[in-house]
Length: 165
Length: 313
Image 1: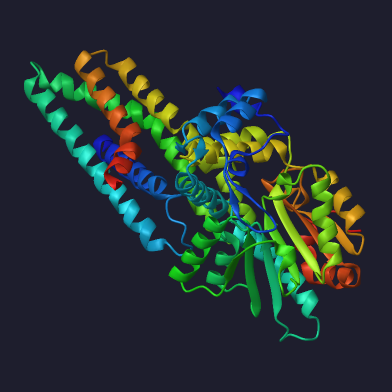
Image 2: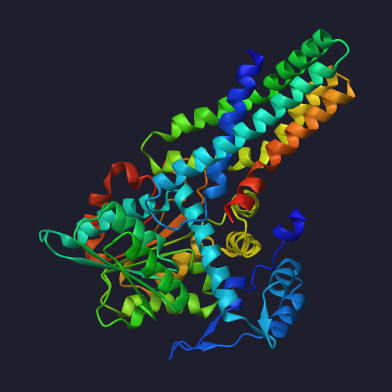
């Protein structure tokens, strides 16, 4: 369940990253298809990152002298990451629901109060989630894994931009 | 770092204004010298602007026109993203609808000509044309910058939109505008030129105007900085966006200028507070309508939106 929720959050985040990376590059008015493609692109890049992390975890487990302890540690760390990331995601998804109300003012408020500040906070929340997870599992291998996840999470927009050119 | 951004010199130029220069009579482009610009921004202690200008390619000290044009189009595209996010097209339509209804009166077939002053790449008009939220209107955008107008026309053609964009002075068009609109240009008019802007509208056959600009609140500079930091990629767009909020006019100043120099209009600020509550908005607008239309306009505005309208005089 923890792995599934982390995968779901990572995928949703990658979709939004895809949108953000594409925004401000196309000045047409009707660009639903453009954004849908960009979000799909974000999701696909996100899946690649997830697969890489999955392979790393499998390697770590295979190479570990006591794989069951490592699995428990990873579960523990993942659970703690969810404690930080789920409330953040819930606020954003709620803002999307509110944004469905057909009012220019309400839509603007979701941007000023949630989308803008939360995009600003995203890297900080990302770091806090990883630190909170690592506090419970003080192992160098898990620390390196956390660092790689963080770099991929925060670097996704840059990677998407690089491959756009 | 944040302090450097939040303390941008209030009365100084935006970079996008400084890196292009046009003769307003002949519309010919004049060379802009990099050394002069760097010297200017150094004098006013705007280190952010110095860095940005230094990075623009030059040819024998003259800023490279192609590089400048590319930069301006990129920055406008990024700024459009903010307009989209803040529903600016819909906001403009919201206030234009009752004005148009009022000006038409009994004659519902009357075509209303809307002219956008300093339209840039024409987001607002293209949005109005694409969504067809206003019926039987002629949409014309004007700007002194030929590159931006070319881009606006290219984008309109690409989507087959019924609007056109012209290089030149909005007040010098052959056909007069029924309504003048603008977005984010008022703060560019400093000192007497702000009064001149309204004076010109008072003299023409114009029946109404709607000018949107950043709302000057305590939080505006920080909010603008935050949004431009997370949404803009181009340093120029970030710089000018933040500076726009810093140097935007207070509502009282806009009203004073409009009432003094456009006395034939009833004017008010629309959208200062959200739903009449003490929650500041990102944008507010200066709305003006010829006195004879004032009562009908208020009637057509509707009760709900009247909450957002300040005192109209």
